[in-house]
Length: 282
Image (tube, rainbow, N blue to C red; front, side, top):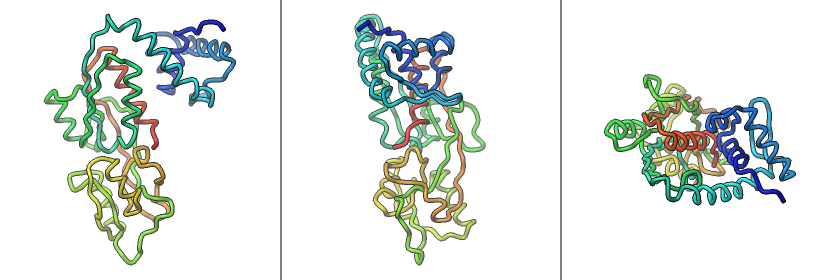
């Protein structure tokens, strides 16, 4: 069998990670057509279709999902051999809003390590306001936060829809106030959700308060309450119960990256984090 083209393997991994030929081409400083051609040659060599392509969407095929892990290992070994002496170890501190991360942190850390083994990642999970203060104070290099309507600045990564998450068959006792799980009175999303319940004249009872999507979602996964969460950060097995329970819609919020870092290594790592948050669903 012929030797694999490592440039084509790299193009495949970037396209899979970023879900975009255009983004991969920008990263590789080449054209979209060149990236597509490299991957097609790789598919021909492997005699497998690695990516499913539509005009607006790129996703892994079954064979692509299988090959991706091996491709990462191959490229990681090559990069370690080439850069273990020349590339210095450096630290990158990233703050991520507690509304956006659930159980995907281990997978995200593994992906970042494979991308750049010499980059020491320090992830801080906290409220958006706290993370912005940490960034201003220099405690974190970058902050990925949920922005309120009055907030400005940063690079918008995507728009997040929040919902009332719970177990599919969960039904509250109609004779009692609706049990809800939130992040407490300091959380603007919690306050907006409660205002919506009050406006709809739905009685509620805050039965669980926790910090972070994983903690708040645990009450929903246990069948104790509905949780105010982004669907992509909700625990596995939970679903949006808004329509079933006739609950008011929760607000859309922009997710923005705040960072002044311009070096290639940092920008690549931050882009991987942003794409991973956007694509994840537990």
